[in-house]
Length: 587
Image 1 (tube, helix red, strand yellow):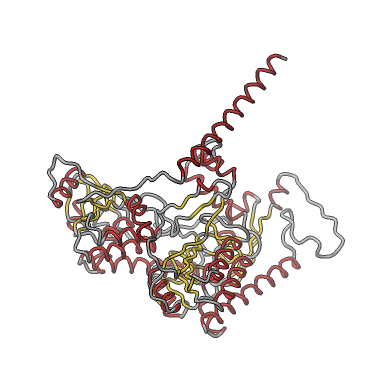
Image 2: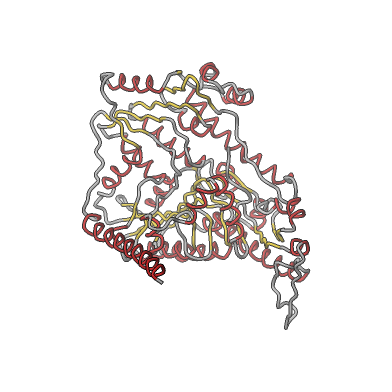
């Protein structure tokens, strides 16, 4: 009995300890959270360091805790915060140049292009940009290729070999495991579910992947060609023969300028700034500089606002969060911007592969209501495909990057089926019904003819509605839409030619159009959505409870966890889907 008492007292003691720690943190936050100023200092004669080895989202996000406002977060490391920082550095006398140093950039091709465009604009100031790497990945080099001088480590390496993407096919696995997906789709190019139906890539799918990969590669080559004064044809020769794989070959191919160790690179920067070699180089990281710049950009006194609403991630029916576009969160943001008299126009930044057809339609409806009140412009990022295009099609104007992947106007439904597995392990499912179609679907029985017919009808209905939305929004006939639909994927360049977008450009171009449409001159940017967190998430952030995801990552590793998340993501999709047909991981 005394043992049990000691155990209980210990448990209670630990519980009280954590409660006291939490309360202490609350008190400290209230006392210091709102008033403490961790102001970033920028010293004279500084270099801005582009350290981009963190996941770059279009929108860094804003999170509020209703009950604990001192914990509110509004980080400034999103793509456009970084762009703002680079643009501000152009006229900042304290910043003498930019160093792109040993990046392993975690961003899409279009996001990388957006940063590259900002750096090109920075170069107009006459300030220098230099780049160094032990290893140049292909996207790193694409970004760094505009530098005045490019350095590589003497024992380093470079990737310059062209683009590829890879798909896994599961038809044989399904037959062997007894776990399969029942698939109904519409659109000959709608290949999101192809891996469950075939054991190899279809000709249609290979065609569309080949076309868009080559268009992306052509855009990258064109920009590298202009910066390095090397013909596009020669760049292909270099890629085909791997003529930049070593530092010596990279020099011979004129892709880099100097071979040097990192300390020599730093000494070169000191020399450029006129600093003694025994003095420390003054640098500031891009994330810190973005924090420094943000309040200066907010200082505008204008009452006019342009709302920028980010639709980034899979589209789902329900609440959203960072990296997930929930129709509730999205529509709440659109409605707030619509009802705010100070917001004169709205820009929706779409970076999404799509998702729920129902959620996409509900977001479309909110945009339809908003267009009657104020201008709505869409800016497309890396992906605005399928459901991502659905919500964009209704805008007054659509702006895409040349490297944006868009279109994919097609529909599918996929249901897991365990009939063969159940048979193999001796499990039999029996149903008792009151009406013919009482069983909508059972994972232990294959789709019967009636079920398949009704699901197919639903998918065709959604496809017809999707094409009508595109027809009405883009002022195209249904026949014209059908020619470019069928689930086919297009790049921004091609989408412009066929009428899916109006103009090529970035978020800044979309904002300019919003300002013109609103007929205003001065304005401030108001960003949405604002996410809310609950107590459980707050405890996780304090380290009092470790997130289950972090535990899995520690046990299985980041790459394996990524695969698990992908399987979970697919299994959670409910209803008819408007989804980009394959993984957007381009290497």
